[in-house]
Image (cartoon, rainbow, N blue to C red):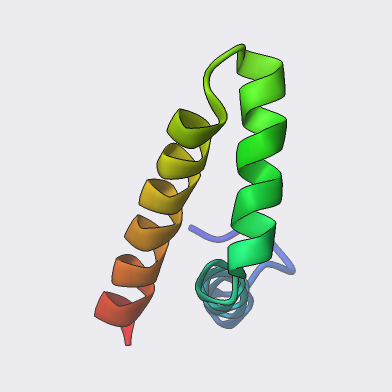
Length: 67
């Protein structure tokens, strides 16, 4: 059951906003996140960027599925 003040509508709105944010992730931001991940994880930039793109693509597919 939803917590008081956290209605089903509010939860749905938050989910929708998160999905829109994931879909709106720009190529530039993907590259920035890839650079940051590479730096922090000690992996190649190309590997990090590919991972970020893979995750973002998954978000986009999920957002499309949710319609």
